[in-house]
Length: 256
Image 1 (tube, rainbow, N blue to C red):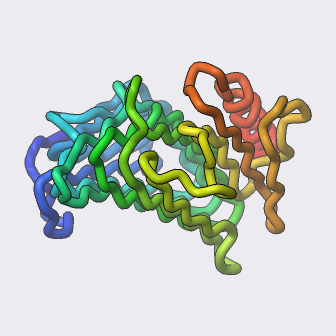
Image 2 (cartoon, rainbow, N blue to C red):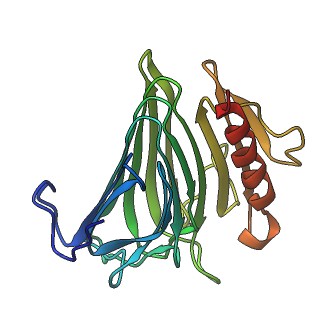
């Protein structure tokens, strides 16, 4: 394992904010895990012969106006990676300046990703563009928990454009774009709701949990699904149990 606090040489040029790289590949006894970070810091929690658990957290105040954060994740064929957020993320008032948060994930054949993300909060005055691009190799799967909150307590929230793109060897699997402003709600999008909580299961992820409560379920054409709930306050919805059920089902689906 390598861990540095300087910008990696293979990182693109970005504005202040940071870049992190997480890689997992099989090893003779334990998985080979590469960790590099500046601004956003990954660290190793545990690893097995072809698996790793990694935590990520901010190395300073994030996300400020003008910041550009990029996180690259690469999981080799047959390996698995679990990512745990530490502390969540708040996009602060950028005073008119845009902040960006981009995640690029590449999963090799039969690779597995579980990402238990904590809430991404868009405070009053924040302007954010956020994206996740996920590439699946044959037989790969990903379970991603994603919670978007407009505003801290007592706030309506700023503006965000959130994009999700998933592709496999046959082409696009899921393409979504959400554009919202907490201070200018639009009927038919979120209305008066401030929270969007999602469990995104793509690739060879097995069947959706039988009981998804009041959340909506979208089944994807080439396998996988999205379970999503909206609410006015984060404490009124909880997809934790559903997330863990999805993880168990994906694990069962990956066994021969």
